[in-house]
Amino acid sequence: MASGWRRAGRVVGIGLAALGTLVLLLYAPGAASVRVVEKNPGTNLHLYLPAVLFPLGLKLMPDAELAKAAREVGPWLPAIRIAAEELRRIPDGPLVLVEGPDGRVSVEKRGDKLVVEVEESDESVYVSFPLRFVGPMIRELEASEPPS
Amino acid sequence: MRKVLLFLGMVLLAATVASAQTATRWLHVKVEEMGEKAETVRVNIPLAVAEKVLPAISFDNVRGGKLKLREGKIILGDERLDVDVRAILEALRTVGEAEFVTVESADETVRVAKQGGYLVATVDERSGSEDKVNVRIPFAVVEALLSGAADELDLVAAVRALGQHGDAVLVTVQDKKTSVRVWVDSRNVSE
Image 1 (cartoon, chains in turn purple, blue):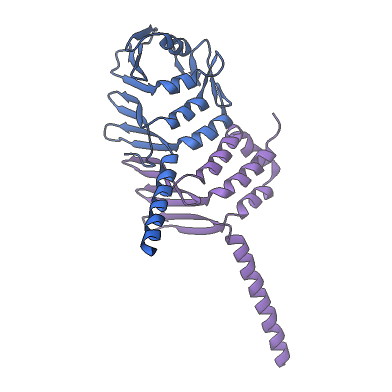
Image 2 (image 1 turned 90 degrees about the vertical axis):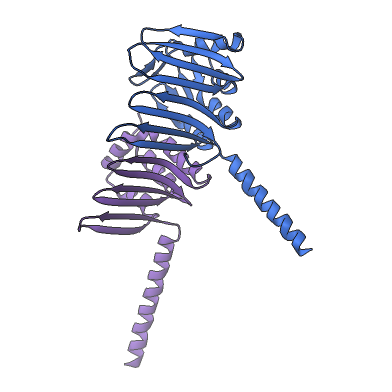
């Protein structure tokens, strides 16, 4: 009986260690954060996703959908990829700031991340994404673009 | 001895930080609207990023970091500058300081001059609008723009030349509803 518990404990321990390693492997390269807060009582959403999953997610998208997305932004893909690579090398700072009576939108480079914040009267949205994962995602889109 | 090493370390750190800061030059664009629903837009672009990204842009008449001119004119989508830009710039190479080259078209009068190492241009629209456009571009940037083939403007060379120039206000546009300012400096934030 005692050996049965020991075995179960060992299995749980190995499982937790494997899970911990998996989480570490997934999150160590960087995470994307999405936060949506509705100011009038409503949805409060906060996602903290491993960025490494995004290029993998694109691989899992239906080919037709991916090709459509690639066609729409196709001409800009190389420029976006190079911009993301170059932005990693520059000091932190605001890149775009739009302020008006209806709210505020900012795009900022913070560390290794591109941070987009939208502040409106009824909700606020915060998205941060590691710049180093933009390149692999763009390459995935470029690969799916049908030859013109 | 420890104090001397600490001092030298601080000097080295300060020099590194200073050189890192001066290495990055920024192009700033600020658009301010007037009125009740007025918006302000600020864009800050590191010139180093622009220099690398421009060759990758393939849009309309922009290819490989160069803007293809159509009969000397700049045409981007629905927007067109109805004067022979290249001819004006080439003419400025030969005129003396502060001498104006005036170009009149159906919609506007463009006056361009060379003043103290800068190309200075004003655009007056005929349509009765109160638009005032002032352009002040270092002549080294103009030379870089013209460094390509006869029917194009080399944007990448111009950005590179701009990066080597000091702080400068390049463009101001003012009308009843909007003001636009484009300038270059070493700060990563707009004013």
